[in-house]
Image (cartoon, rainbow, N blue to C red; front, top):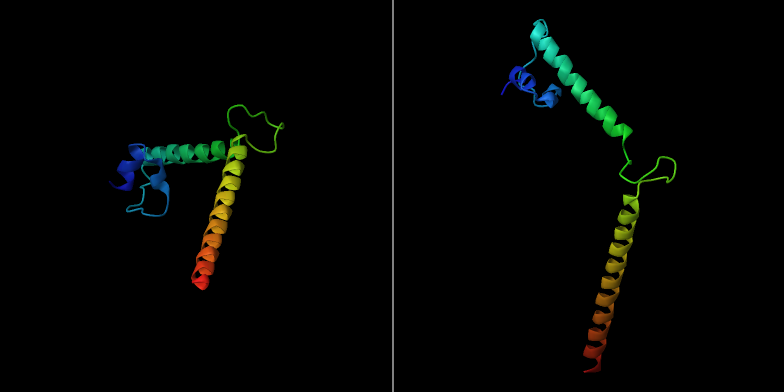
Length: 105
């Protein structure tokens, strides 16, 4: 699908410079209109996603320095670190026991 068709069909992100196979004919009024609409949709998406960054259901602005789901992410990171540490200690202890058993024979 070329750029003109894609933008007219609602493919707003076809405006990016990467992967563009054809330029828009901006001198055509319809093409200019669809290009403006596509750019408006892309910019509104970026602005609204940045404005709501970190705001989730149940969070009051100003109450917490970050969103509630960060507690879950921190707990998962701590659990993963603890499991890695436990696994490393278990492997080293087993290796030491096997080494000591070989020396005893």
